[in-house]
Amino acid sequence: MKIAIPYNPLPHQLKLHKDPSRFKLVVGGRRVGKSKSFLQEAIRHSISNSNRFTWWVAPTYNDAREIGFDEFLKLREVLEPAIHSIHHTRLKIVFKNGSVIYFKGSDKPDSLRGRGLTMAIGDEAAFIKRDVWYKILRPALSDRQGVALLGSTPNGYNWFKELNESQEWTKYHWPTALNPMITPEELIAVQMEISRDEYRQEYLAEFITKAGRVYDEFTDANIISPWSPDPKEYSVYLGMDFGFAHHTAVVFMAVERASDNNVIQFDELYVKKTQMDDIISQIRTKLGEHKLNQSYIETGYTDPAGNADELSSGLSPVDMLRNSGFNIINKGSSVNAGIALTRSFVKNSLGVIRYRVTDNCKETIRCFNGYQYTTNKSGTVKEEPLKDNIFDHLMDAVRYFFVNKFDHAKYITTVPDQRLYTTEVKKYRVIKKCSNCGTPFVSYTSIKSPPFKCSDCLKKDIK
Image (cartoon, rainbow, N blue to C red; front, side, top):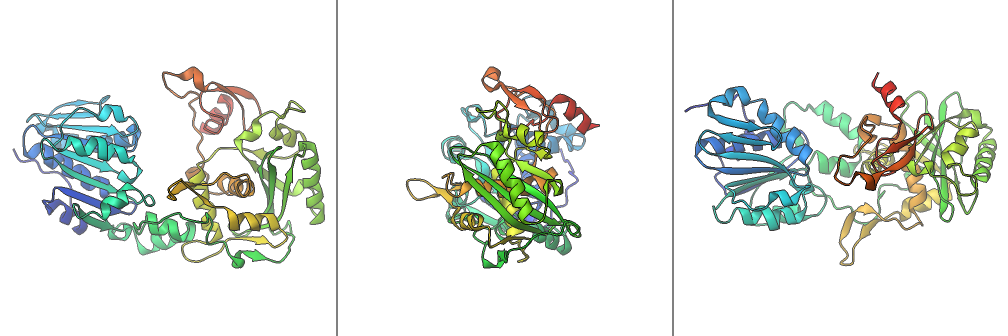
């Protein structure tokens, strides 16, 4: 039986398809065609010989469905003569010759045990845990001398990088530019939006370690003389991280109206063991020093934890700010995504600086220079910043501003579901306050996870 699949591989993909190596590894940038190539490899492996057993493993079940299974379904009509059955719940394809493809998520490793494989595909393998490869997938290939194809965008210095340095593997390096659909103009536009390291990792497919300072490109070039914004030319915002035993941090941000892209931090507030009503008074005093008043503040951006009640008043910091006339938004965000966005303003991949800090913001500058990535006992750098209560509070306030003000679709998640579907639902039952109207509502996710709005406000967003 001959089946003609509508697939025209690019030169870099064709080289992979012709390679008979048992172990192949692709380090690739975004949108370069990794997953599409891997799907073709899985299909060819399954229909060219009988009784083949393939697992396509992605970081999560949803990834496996969306990137693997759903893409396979687009080829269903042309592959129909070879297909015996499709199980949509189990993400299982059974072919008439006895071959089987499963699409699986590595977030449930217990579901990956117990089978001998003729092929293992790891899609975005750098985001899969080390033990999934070494303790589950690799042993499953041994008895049938199965083949492996792993591919991913780099994710720091982890086990995927170790495999890339192994002599056992045939390696391929696919930067995004290999895809002719991604124009040079598009790549330049991307470089304007992200930092140098993010561009090197995500588009040049280079392994970048996050050792040392989180914002290593924050330099004297980001620091300017004291300055006050002209409200006709700049919009004014606040970024806030609340504390009491630890510091409360407030950053005063001015965004150029003409570009809506250039940011100047012109002041800061960094206080400890201070009641919220005193903090509000100090915010107003700071504004007055710049010949501004509260009416010039368009929005204050805070941490979702700001919804927690303050013991002395029974009101949360967000409630107190809103009762004092401030417009407050407090949505959650991914820490790493927020850091990446902030880094792109500190200095983007083209060397353009879009965020400057006046030198009267002594604590902010100190924190930029001291904010570090976490290291474990062996000295290995972890892909997360250190929470030390020394440098992190002002950095969180800065991040809350950027992640809320810019690029909402990518960095902020709002979902209509009110529940986390799990067998332990009661464990996650919490009371949140709507970030839009302040109404309390029941949620089954953690305080820092979506949703952050009540059902009524979510329905309005959808409309």
